[in-house]
Figure 1 (tube, helix red, strand yellow):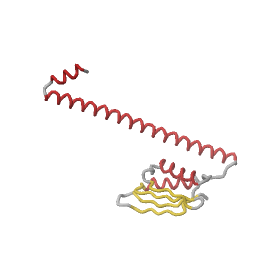
Figure 2 (cartoon, rainbow, N blue to C red):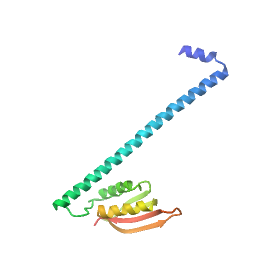
Figure 3 (cartoon, rainbow, N blue to C red):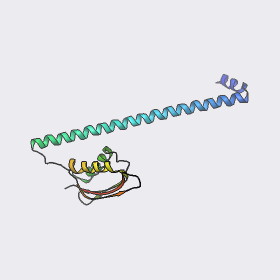
Figure 4 (tube, rainbow, N blue to C red):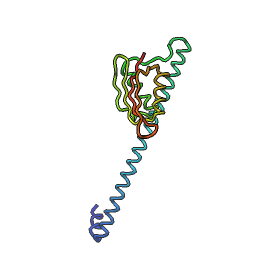
Length: 163
């Protein structure tokens, strides 16, 4: 360490400035590399969770089909309880690429949920509502779609209820 101080103090002002600049660039590069590595790892984990969730959903659907074929379950079984219903809304919104558009999800009555979305892709909203109604047995009691300046983008207010 003493030798480094001696070398540094024996340099001219311009050389010291260049060494310090190089040091700052190297530190910034190391920070940048660490940050990108960290964010890439987080992104991989998100993809992994999404894949696992899709597998889980598929397994639940397969289990329902098996029960239906055995005659022990009715078609379109709906989740029981508000927490399960809220989780279903959130999970299916993520699956239909609407999670970032989901502004508010609020319980309504005994078995209902009121949902607000902003600037959502119309096609994704239709697919999402179809999934909730026909795959999960929810009833779309009330829905309002307001078009935006951008084609194919809507604001959504919907009331969904379990039968």
